[in-house]
Amino acid sequence: MFELVKAWYVKKFSDPHSVTLLLMLVLTVALLYFFGSYVMPVLVAIVIAYLLEWPVNKLAQVLGNRLIAAIIVMAAFTGIALGLVLGIVPILWQQLSNLLQESPTMIEEGKDFLLHLPDNYPTLISTEQVQSLVSGVERKVLELGEMIVSISLTSLKDVAAWLIYLILVPLLVFFMLKDKNELTKGIAQLIPKDRKLIAQVWYEMDHQIMNYIRGKVFEIIIVGVVSYVTFSLLDLRYAALLGTLVGFSVLIPFIGAALVTIPVAAVALFQYGIAPEFWTILVAYSIIQALDGNVLVPLLFSEAVDLNPVYIIAAVLFFGGIWGFWGVFFAIPLASLVKALINAWSSKSESLLESMEP
Image (tube, rainbow, N blue to C red):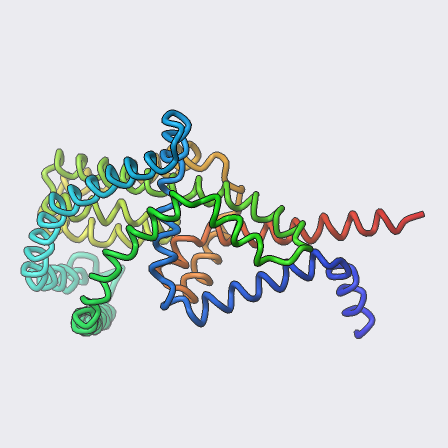
């Protein structure tokens, strides 16, 4: 057993570049795991900087000055963000308030519908099964309500922190865009000289992360707008709120679409009952999800690493459990990073074995 471990170690880590890559990986993961909450504004700024790097780079090539390009892009981004917040958030808040006020009625109607199932389909479901299901749903609803209240009370203490973030994050983004080259050189000086594999993985992931963030933002906007327009045309209530939920559901591959189906179906059922309009909304929602998965995603993420859906779901569960929202958001790039690391070590091991052959 010891000889097997020794042979594996010699094969994978006999080269100093491999050891440096491993140490940098362990250090980065430990830093994010233990101090992630403290550097959260920096992480958010990095995400936004990746999103804005492409327009800044293109505009800098036209103007010949990166500082002016960064100022113009940041001003445009800030204006668009403020416009969206001031224009959309009040509508979403109003619809959410109305939905919460009507939720007790919706729950009662759903409960009544379930309790009448044994009368309509006595061979398929029994009264005891329905009562057990209703009790479980009521318990989950109470737990969800308690969790929402606790989160709301906790978030009140974080208002000052959010106000600080609203000032710090734009400043960090601006300086990251303006001084990209200087910051990159400074980080390079902190990395050991044996960094060939680090550079290989970095160049591969840098391009992929930029494409992923930009593509994911476009996907959220496109899916959200299309869902809102579709729900509005079908006269579904809370169209803006549901369209926003559908848009953000793409952050969690496969799982998000399944979860958002519940509120969409619940609102449609409450509004129309088991009627043709209800099935029309479900069919339209299914078409949107199918077009997103089979047309939009391949177009936006054509340069991303091809990953099996099993790996993507496993990455969402694993990284989401460690880092919460940001773990879910970066699940695909992190899974691609793991694949890139494996490829880098494998290629290094193969080249090492070839060099040892006579």
